Image (cartoon, rainbow, N blue to C red; front, side, top):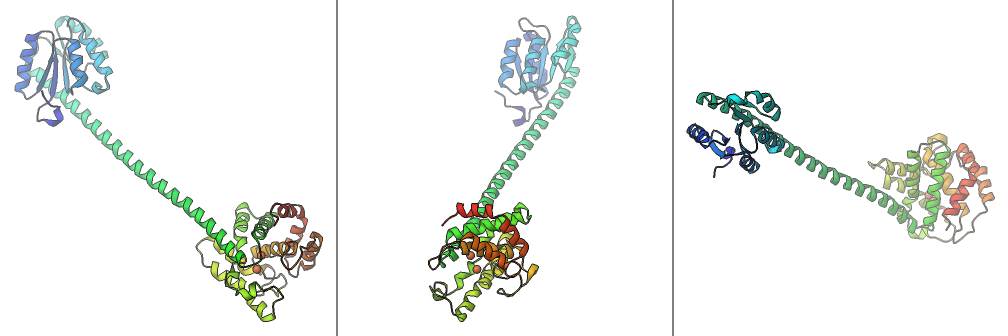
Length: 367
Ligand SMILES: [Fe+2]
Ligand SMILES: [Fe+2]
């Protein structure tokens, strides 16, 4: 059995279809002597059987055969995707000339008169096979290209999936780190998780009331629980002292703002830098006299002024081991008395005016 053209030095593989065995023998001898690889079929059915399994470079097809006609065979060949581009050369006797147009419509690529001229036959076949090889080359290139594209797409998808997983991982890690950092400070103090939740929700609310966009409000919400992270650096005997602090102890206690700033500053994350600013400035006072730097008015970053109100209001209205919770009205009076002194007057007014929302938050995160 002969191998496909691509694996041999054969000039091409030709399927001869003719009911006249004598014609096939003559053609076969000629074609083999020219280096072609020849398959033969005595009728249309046999031709289609061979074509279904064998690679073929050109079909030489007799027009008039008993059983399936040459036209039928040609149409069926064309219906097989494998033979979409396989050249079909019709051998037409004088009587068949009228059918040439029909044959063309059926997918014929060339015609040869019968009795055939040897040189003409060889010339036609050489051209046909050249066309076939050209299409084969195109097919190979196309499938190689498709393979390469699919491979690259696959690699790209895998890389994208890895990147997405990493990004999710980073987002989770960032959130958790912030949360755990805030909790670390909370464990060292009498402040509760509920204080952090309320204080963070008040900051978010004030951000909205003062007209910050949702991104900035979200930053306030996430970053504000870290305001006292610097308490990690305050000795236990001062931080946990039940009674009043001496003035020396209070001086040390006040260092938590600077320590928190040092812990959080210099980050590549905007959020963490924002948290550093809150830790640094939440004890500054509008009229000056706060700590650690004694800033005044709008020199105190907005997030620090917001955090100051949220932090103090929640401290006043919460019970602690050593004190009762203040009544809301007293806490509001304290804020208003401190407006323009301790607190930004504009923010204080906004906060007091939003007392319904404030109390809803307080209700939601009670101790
Ligand atoms: Fe603080
Ligand atoms: Fe606090």
